[in-house]
Image (cartoon, rainbow, N blue to C red; front, side):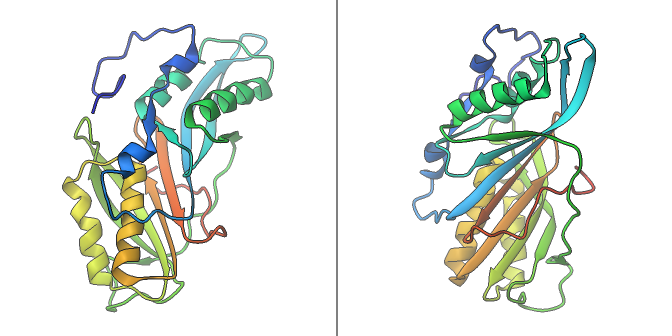
Length: 249
């Protein structure tokens, strides 16, 4: 797998064309690795960028948090290191208003992803949902339509082999076997996958194993380089999840 910047030195990247910094990841190429992968009908990837800086009209530096929402049915998504470099390219440029910045971001990211990407400045986060621990559960099966979480998820970056950590939320109908779920989620600890594909695989494997009619899987990954990525996959368009922050994020 060859990427523009991931696993390479990038401290001197300069570009007058900000859009060219972005490195697309073809979702179809990633999911085609797995013949029996069942993709969710609904889903988004929520990116929180905590270190977005720019100059205002008076050339005063500003630092804000961005929320970027990419639909799961976009043909492409963005390699995270290139997103960091792209967002960092705004730090020394002056803009009349926040609206001007959002327009640039939305146009560039929507063009790259081949879908309508939403970008907003974030001021507050939702409360974390109440959920039962899968690891400490005393029962053999989950309760239907009850939220559970696995707060020790580990996977590896497929290029750098560096660890990624996350809290995984799962809600299903009917019930699922807790021991199977814990063992399956633990199996990712030495697997190199992008965040989005991890959640796609968890959704698909759970669907295949238990033939559930309703299923939602939400991954809250810990931030790296000032950005966290949080994929949500669901069988329903109405989701109980929102953009909250875990303690480690």
